[in-house]
Length: 151
Image 1: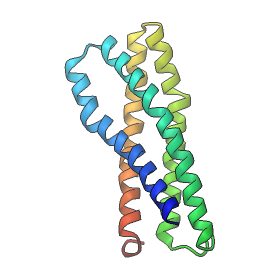
Image 2: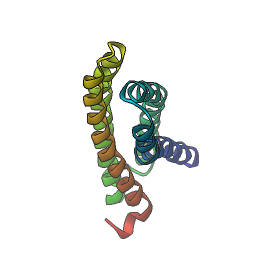
Image 3: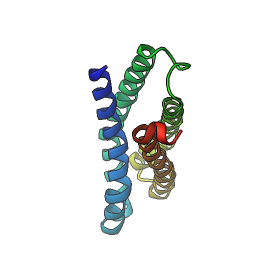
């Protein structure tokens, strides 16, 4: 249980912490210092590095979370906050997959073609979804840590 819990938490830190940093620190800095071609190219490189870590985090979070839930007797046996945390995690995963398979692919194509207006449109869509996912991630951490006292 200890190893699964550790891997689970580390994966959450990588994913949610990465989104928080990108949204709160990197995004405003890049917007204030870089013109669209440089800014969009930067984000493409950032996502190229971060998204494989998100995929690894998703796999680890799902595997470790499901393993711990099964060790505790399954979904019916765990506390309500665990089910809430799992549901919020699934929403986050679905939002990430949408970003990865839709606006991110279009962003890469726009940057490769130097279509900066289209790239900006796709980056803005990613920004909105990452903002929502960051909030859901923080909420999930609150549910996980406050647990029984909340739900």
